[in-house]
Amino acid sequence: MKVLKFGGTSVGSVKSILSLKRIVEKEARRQPIVVVVSALGGITDMLISTSRLAQEGKEEWKEQFEQMVDRHHKMIDTIITDTNDRETLFNKVDSLFEQLHSIYFGVYLIHDLSKKTLDAIVSYGERLSSNIVSTLVKGSRWMDSRDFIKTTTSPNGKIILDTDLTNHLVKKAFADLPRVSLVPGFISSDKDSGETTNLGRGGSDYTAAIIAADLDAEILEIWTDVDGFMTADPRVIKTAYTIDELSYVEAMELCNFGAKVVYPPTIYPVRIKNIPIRVKNTFNPDASGTIIKDKIDNDHKPIKGISSIKNTSLITVSGLAMVGVIGVNRRIFTALANNGISVFMVSQASSENSTSIGVRDEDSAEAARVLNNEFAAEIEDGAMFPMHVESKLATVAIVGENMKHAAGIAGKLFGTLGRSGISVIACAQGASETNISFVVRGAELRKTMNVLHDSFFLSEYKVLNL
View 1 (spheres, one colour):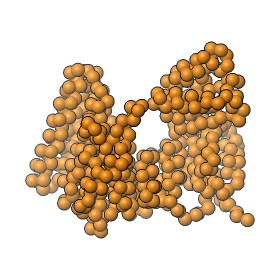
View 2: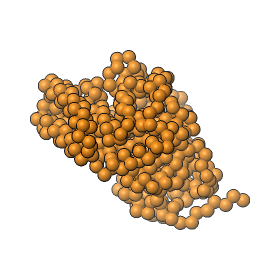
View 3: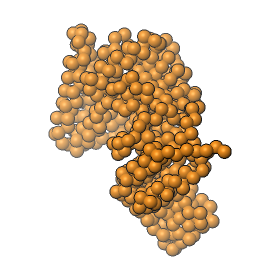
View 4: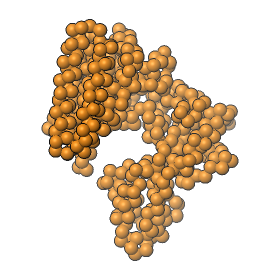
């Protein structure tokens, strides 16, 4: 059996959702499939923004709510041709919208929006879209993912998957597989209270991966609006092209550094079971896409892709008292983690007198405040300096497992940047040698990406194994 996941753009228009229907019906003739769908493109953001308007007591929430109702109604009117099916679906959808309206009205009245309430609100995107697709695909069985995707709360208050319970419930729920099982992605429920939770933005990919792993699927297919992973962002690099194959490690590295093709946590469950992932284009279903698997054919290309994260900041923790002191880095990362701040790059001087960490611009002020508080005593004594924050930067990563077998990659990388007049502010490379990441000025990101793509992908670069 297969698991197919369709993202927001794949269900966001009449054209795309009819393409989805053809793809699903074709696959269902071959074997049983589980189809996981996201909310209609843009609806999750609209659900959240409407929540904020209601919380602030602004009447505009009603207008945005009606826009969401109108969009779903127009979609149903256009794609569901059977009168009885359309009437039944309208009843389901309108019932969901009535529930949603009641929640919004409550938020509007009391000017309060708790996390639990917001989790309940955003769940309606997938609940609405999955019912529409289930009606469109004849003979499919709609299943509520909250019945088998279970979460719990970690000691620091984070919602996390209860893996063992979910595994058991998924196998039980799908013991009898119809030709097509239709599942809303992203949403889940608390294992104790049953309250609606979610797996985070991008969580529909994760839902599909969990089901694929628990059911030992033949393959997980991620259907989106691009032909697969590209050598670079095609909006920046016009000559970027589709990558045929990636290893799990390469895909995860590219995802972590800005390639938004697959939600990063998606890869882990299927990697454990050695289940391949294929990324396909709903708008171009005949394209082969990108296959992600454990063992890939060695094409001897040292670099598979270039990825980047815009709007990043570099925070430098420094001081002579750091040299040889055990536990400084532990304190840095513990303090940041306890305050929910994610770090995506670390660069440390060999003298140990400074450590630079990469965070998003919007987190930089809070990260600096947290670290200044953590090391307040040392700063007051003069043993350490106050945090130095440099913003409006960009982090770039070149990724490829063959880098570990090729000498001179870092030399070529920094030589290319130097000849192009691009200054590297900080850099880092893991011992696995699958990723070299570095920080440049945000204004130089486009130039950086272009010169590196030309150097590594459009010029002859051969590795001789002598």
